[in-house]
Image (cartoon, rainbow, N blue to C red; front, side, top):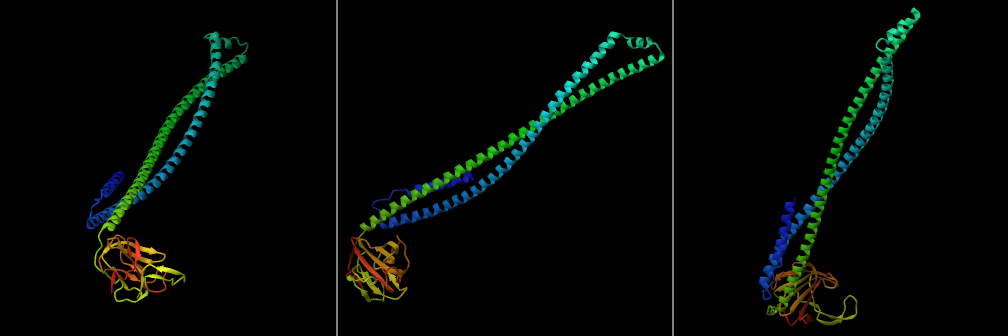
Length: 377
């Protein structure tokens, strides 16, 4: 995905660099139109790349959500491992206390055994036999024999107890060692899981940085494209103002409909009743009647105006332009080249209008003039 993203940005940069090719100040209308067509094609390619970037954005967001789920799962595992570590630590602590207690018991038994061995040693090898022989009677001798047997038995039991205790201590130490190994393994697993979380978080941050970078780059390219388009528009306007008038008489803008309901000049406003200056002529016609270009030129405006309604302005060169207002539907776009007699709209009653008609103006040097000297019925 990173490679694809890099390719996308590279293509966008190429397109925008091409858009920034300088415009020849002496370019003809035809060459400028060719540049506009090329520019529009580049804009389409840019839109395509922008769409791909948006798709990448959506895919990246999905991956980020997936990473969030992965991180949540790893955090749960880490919490579980920490509980195991705490449990084993408690067991080791308990075992340590048991080892200490057993050690104390062994020490005590060793002291007892040591005292008995010393007593036996002092009496010599015949100590127990002499004790029996010095008895005053048989019953006393038997009693002493029983006592000696009990002492010997206690010594044996004490020795066995010491051996058992030593064995228990050894077993506890082995168990403790196994648990220590187990806890070390768990610690290593914990570290591994934490590294996985760290790696996942780094991936997430990398995705976010890349995503934000692409979005900012796309916005920057769009801003540059707008600047280029603005330069083209200014150059177009300049060339249109400088170009010569198309020449000849203008065609009647509504073929077959010649009744003028409101001429050029002063009149009472048909909607508001006050005295006003009518900037053109109103030609009566039916709804959706063909409205044609009075002469060849370039469409400067094709849009909406609160008074004109749906209207068109055509630049014919020589600082002469025409206006067509109150249309139901527009058939041309701004920047489009039109020829004399070409249908540019369908008539209507949009904007400030009392019924279906075409408002037609002629402008020279930006000021309205009487259209009648320019048109031929």
